[in-house]
Length: 124
Image 1 (spheres, rainbow, N blue to C red):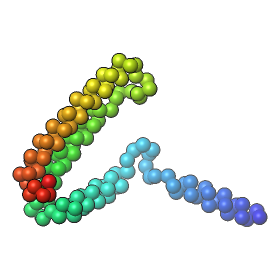
Image 2: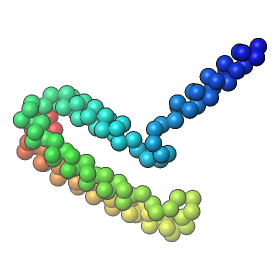
Image 3: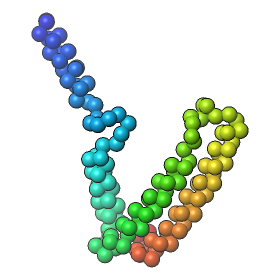
Image 4: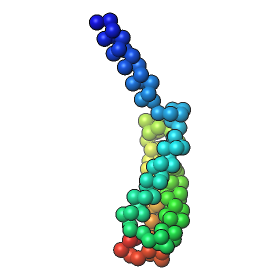
């Protein structure tokens, strides 16, 4: 009975120890980010059935668009939690988010035109 308890305790402790992600909490793992990025590239390339020349023209434009989208999304985040905002501040944040969504839509229109220049319309 005592051995079973000790074995169970050891199994529980080792599970908890090894279940933690590597690196400091809240910080992304660069190794995992690279792996995810390479999987994303392979998936998109495969789904669009990009030729090597299409791929070479597509990825710089795509990455540029994603960087700009990321910057817009970072602007959308309120400076403090929604629960801490006054009604007037919440309205201001909502108005700002609407403007940023319009900016994001304009960005997508712009990049759709750029994609049309480097890819056939069926692949856009």
